[in-house]
Image (cartoon, rainbow, N blue to C red; front, side):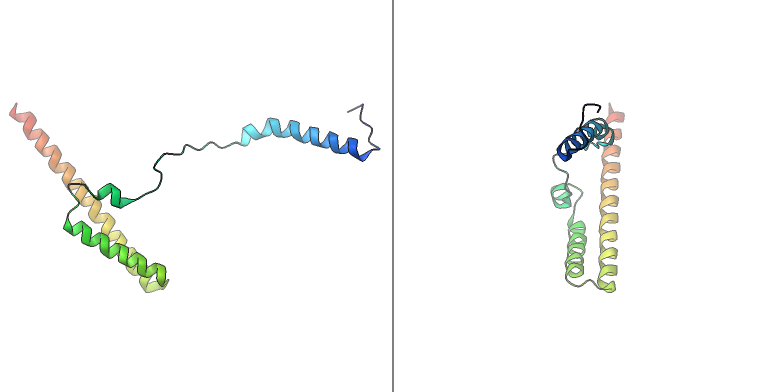
Length: 118
């Protein structure tokens, strides 16, 4: 800094630019945020449940009601359509969880029986 002529605007600009570069080179790594991005980060329940053994006709009907309520809500953002969408979504998600749980419980019971038969 002692070699800088502060009477010339160009020297001041260069000094400020160098100073800013030094500060950024030290501070940027401290404030950097890293994200781990997965390949399939989007949620598409159709591909998750489409071929599942536990996903039966009852689940398909609930899913259709839920998607229809979503379409209705997206076209008409009223409180009634929002409430209906919320109820159908909640019902569908609860049904999916119950069916999965029941399926897993049945599979575990089958495995226990096989293990006991040995």
